[in-house]
Amino acid sequence: MLQTMVPLLLEMQGITKNFPGVQALTQVDFDLRPGEVHALLGENGAGKSTLMRILFGVHQKDSGQIRVRSQDVSIRNPHHAQQLGISMVHQELNLVASMNAAQNISLGREKHTLPGVINWRAVYTEAQEQLARLGVEVNTRVPVRYLSVAQQQMVEIAKALSWKAEVLVMDEPTSALTPHEIDQLFQLLKRLTAQGVGVVFITHRMEEISALADRVTVLRDGRKVGSWPVKEVGMNQLIQAMVGRSVSQLFPKVETERREEAIRVEGLERRGVLHNISFTAYRGEILGIAGLVGSGRTELARAIFGADRIDKGTIYVNGKATPIRSPKEAIRHGLAFLTEDRKTQGLVLAMTLESNLALTVYARLSQLGVIHQSKRRQLAADYIDRLQIRPPLPDRQARYFSGGNQQKVVLGKWLARETDILIFDEPTRGIDVGAKAEVHQLMNDLAASGKCVMMISSELPEILNMSDRILVMREGRLVAEVSRQEATQELVMEYATGVRAPTGEMQQ
Ligand SMILES: Nc1ncnc2c1ncn2[C@@H]1O[C@H](COP(=O)(O)OP(=O)(O)OP(=O)(O)O)[C@@H](O)[C@H]1O
Ligand SMILES: [Mg+2]
Image (tube, rainbow, N blue to C red; front, side, top):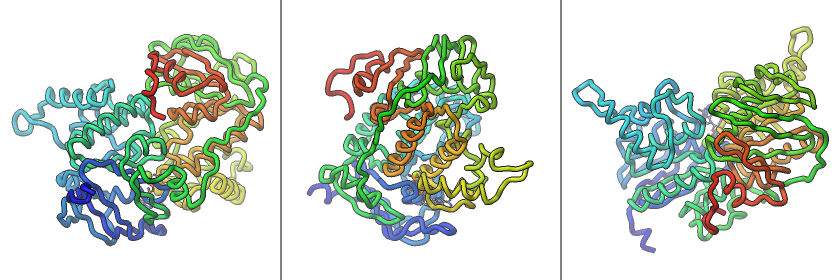
């Protein structure tokens, strides 16, 4: 009751936006009250990022109105948005790779001692303070390209927070984070909303809605389906509103039979990063790898795949000791690695959807060096269909697809290779609930057909539901192996943090 008396921080009315060939938004209304978290939901490509990028002045709307604190505004560019008290954490990391965390955080607002002279001491102190508020440790003096995706995400968040905005837009801020960091972030957001900041929160992790949001708005195909107070709406109802049908089972685990050994790692060492790691992964299973950000999960995958040098240890492929000195060798031995960082490692943004999908299978599609156009087309059509890539346009450049659809392209690219040992690093990051179920089904199929699937995931429900076995890493070591039967969120988190969780503290 009282809530409606408080003036709105933000009103967007009748927002419409067209991109060449795509009607991204049609007559969308959205508003934000001071002190609330308003979740924005929708399938990949529904228009969430576009709506918020219009608010932030990245795109210009075709029609509609925006009011900030009851004033009509026409937001020219991001700088203008920031002056109006709007800040945004982008879905795709927006940092300057060659600059360090402190420089990135202070970019555009550097404090000066004298005109033209930057006060570097203040820059570093402030960066450290911002990161400390988020409870993370990040080296602020190395270029951010050397930081993990999660650390970069934290820097991006710290940067947005440093503007002291009244409207804070977060476009999938948690997609690269583990429960521990998410917890820190949520506590901070709760402190901010208590001070009257309004937060727009985009996520595909449904459990975060009830943990954080007050209100939720769902978009589908660029239109608003509805807005509800979170307390008055059920998860199933939300999923139905998003995908237009009910998704019966989110994690359709199929029990498969474990077959012969696919890959065995013995005494793997990478100085300062990985310590004496030994384990075996089998055909016919999905082996989950859990751990906090920085625990060494991605580093382990990179070391196995030959992307990083190893100092000691042996890798056995199909029972045979196999030195893997480069990703090229790894691929030759039947390994695939879907990286978590699609922007720099997985996807060629300037190439078409079809070329990206065909990237790893040129040999199979070509004859005497000539690529079979029709085969390539067929392959693309197949994966567009299986992964529900939207819009289904093979000739469109990868850069124009929404974040989740780009992730599907990267996934399709590796699936097309038909390799035997697949390492997936955050395979469903940024993928919506409906498509997630499809990807999980695909992983089940891979395991059932006798392939070995290793899955790194920060999403505990995904790890718990999809894995046959779970390896837990902490500080570069393998600290536990948990069977499917004994695995619970609490147990895995206990191993991952090394701390016994007080009961009732965990997010659902
Ligand atoms: N710069 C652009 N040029 C052309 N089309 C675009 C551009 N940006 C987005 N689109 C298209 O607009 C539609 C909405 O995309 P948007 O990125 O807003 O989706 P989203 O809801 O954020 O999805 P996701 O959950 O995958 O991030 C999609 O069809 C997308 O392909
Ligand atoms: Mg998006």
